[in-house]
Amino acid sequence: MATYLNMTINLILSLLLFLISTKSSADHLTDTFTECLKNQSDPTFPVTGIIYTPANSSFSSTFHAYIRNPVFDNSTRTKPSLIITPLHVSHIQAAVICARKHGLQMRVRSGGHDYEGLSYLSYSPSPFFILDMFNLRSVDVNIEQETVWVQIGATLGEVYYRIAEKSNVHGLPGGVCPTVAVGGHCSGGGYGNMVRKFGLTVDLIFDALLVDVNGALLDRASMGEELFWAITGGGGASFGVILAFGFELARVPPKVTVFNVKRTSEENITNIAYKWFQVAHKLDNELFIRMSFDVVNNTEGMKNIRASFPSLFLGNSTRLLSLMDNSFPELGLNESDCVEMSWIESTLVYAEFPVGTPVEALLSRVQQPERDRPFKIKSDFLKEPISRKGLKSIFKKMKELENQMVTFSPLSGRMEEISEFAKPFPHRAGNIAMIEYETYWNQTGTKAANKYREFSRMMQEHMTPYVSKNPREAFFNYRDLDNGVNHHGMNSYEEGMVYGLRYFKEVNYNRLVMVKTMVDPDNFFKDEQSIPPLQSSYEVI
Ligand SMILES: Cc1cc2nc3c(=O)[nH]c(=O)nc-3n(C[C@H](O)[C@H](O)[C@H](O)COP(=O)(O)OP(=O)(O)OC[C@H]3O[C@@H](n4cnc5c(N)ncnc54)[C@H](O)[C@@H]3O)c2cc1C
Ligand SMILES: *[C@@H]1O[C@H](CO)[C@@H](O)[C@H](O)[C@H]1NC(C)=O
Ligand SMILES: *[C@@H]1O[C@H](CO)[C@@H](O)[C@H](O)[C@H]1NC(C)=O
Ligand SMILES: *[C@@H]1O[C@H](CO)[C@@H](O)[C@H](O)[C@H]1NC(C)=O
Ligand SMILES: *[C@@H]1O[C@H](CO)[C@@H](O)[C@H](O)[C@H]1NC(C)=O
Ligand SMILES: *[C@@H]1O[C@H](CO)[C@@H](O)[C@H](O)[C@H]1NC(C)=O
Ligand SMILES: *[C@@H]1O[C@H](CO)[C@@H](O)[C@H](O)[C@H]1NC(C)=O
Ligand SMILES: *[C@@H]1O[C@H](CO)[C@@H](O)[C@H](O)[C@H]1NC(C)=O
Ligand SMILES: *[C@@H]1O[C@H](CO)[C@@H](O)[C@H](O)[C@H]1NC(C)=O
Figure 1 (spheres, rainbow, N blue to C red):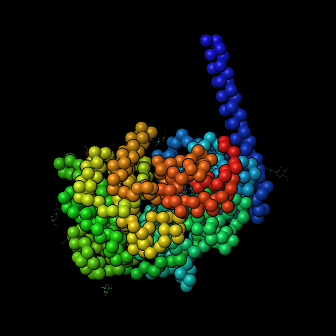
Figure 2: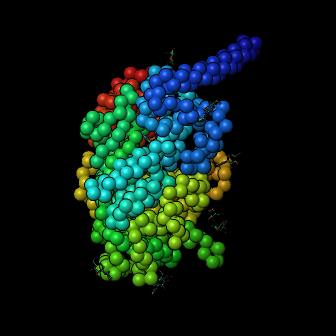
Figure 3: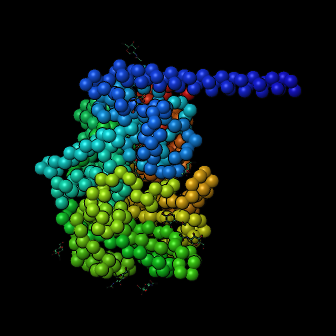
């Protein structure tokens, strides 16, 4: 008994000592790191004013400013010991060099929309800092060359706005949420409503600027084609700090047509959805029809399936209506459903701003209120149409669970013409749609979060018979730790394979591992779902 007590006391004492020593060594680490930053940085661009420690009064507001999922506001994961907000490339270079020199870990955040908060929280107990890129946001449009150079802290809304300021017949295919930043979005794929006409955002990248693990600033020519390939879909977080991307502009017509019809009769929805699976991927490339199911209360207070079809047509409504009459009459689209507008106005409508909102709303960095709630996202890929029986069973499950939204977004068109090896994103020909599971909830706290995340898992589990298998594919930009995690970025090839095959499939995963081994063999750039180097020579924490 006494021995047992002694052992317990010893254990507690050593634990306390451990805690005290790690605490003070963390402080020491951040102090020497900060000193190194000051030593290292270019005197023309001093680092004063860009270093936030928890002692700074604005540390907390800076940390929270770019948390785009409130579920992570009160997370128990490791929070940053420092936040660095670079104003100049030399600050990024100094941060990388000093972090490696002093063994401090790093996360890079551009817009903070990561669905798992990987850009600002860590599962590892090791201290880390955030390199917060929101100040680096220039957008240089060149209409003569039909290109745009964008710094990664710019939001999609800012990019779309700046393009439209110069031309009403140019645009960029990309995501529909205007506050998403270029940094994460365009290094991780970039899916949007012009995908059937132009492909993903990464398909239009022609050049990039990146700070590598040695602090060198590289462009496409100096980084080489393999690294350039990796950061155009394989994510930035494994390979370096991306500073900017150059994109070719897409040519859009001066007027596009949008509609978003909704249907609530379950019998009709089943018929329409059944037809959607047959035709949505075979329609003209100019036409993008998304299909989204959620559950609403009907007038009797009973749960009812609702289907929404938010859509974009790169042409006029006359042509759209004749196309729909020929290929998809089941939807019952009529003239009064269709609104013609400029492409830039369509980006606002698609982001669910009320009709008539000035386009300047795209410049706002404030999250729309209905988005600013806790949520969980998952993804799947659909290769075969779902039967009527299957649809009924999906609707039944959605009604059993709470707050489920299941969205089918078409791939196909231009996506079928691009090889699955052209970029790390492999889900090209042979896919009817990408499926997104969205679960939003209004309650705060861990209990609600656990409940709704579990509902989201159950919903996805229910979809197993209908979706891709071996591997069950997932979209890298829809980060989901249920796809597998590694040990605080200290991952092995096998561990990385669990999520790597889902996001990239085998050939692309192996190629990403080769690039990683070449450019960052000691695994400095890492997170819970990063690409591992081969023959890891680094220490486990
Ligand atoms: C409301 C909402 C709507 C969305 N809509 C779409 C959509 O329509 N289509 C779509 O494809 N996706 C969509 N997404 C997903 C989005 O594309 C990803 O979450 C994307 O990674 C966000 O980029 P970010 O820079 O805002 O996020 P961050 O959290 O800052 O970064 C995401 C990841 O990229 C890394 N990273 C960021 N910047 C850099 C950099 N400069 N260098 C290296 N690595 C970097 C981070 O470390 C992290 O791993 C949406 C997300 C949200 C929250
Ligand atoms: C910073 O520079 C000073 C003077 O050159 C040097 O004494 C010190 O060790 C340096 N600190 C770090 C953390 O590199
Ligand atoms: C944080 O506080 C320190 C000490 O008061 C100050 O020197 C520094 O400029 C502050 N940093 C920022 C980003 O405000
Ligand atoms: C269902 O579709 C049919 C045929 O298009 C239509 O006549 C009917 O009004 C629809 N029912 C509901 C409830 O919308
Ligand atoms: C739908 O009805 C249920 C119970 O009848 C209620 O709890 C729920 O809040 C309602 N949902 C909405 C969105 O009104
Ligand atoms: C609609 O577009 C087609 C070509 O796509 C064109 O022939 C037709 O004149 C246009 N109609 C109107 C009303 O603008
Ligand atoms: C067009 O369809 C909508 C429903 O989507 C309906 O409310 C409207 O009455 C229809 N208009 C015409 C002219 O048929
Ligand atoms: C949850 O909040 C959203 C957005 O504020 C609101 O539209 C919705 O009705 C709320 N749901 C419930 C069940 O209260
Ligand atoms: C986080 O904690 C604060 C303070 O306790 C609370 O007001 C807030 O609602 C919490 N947020 C979430 C999303 O749980």
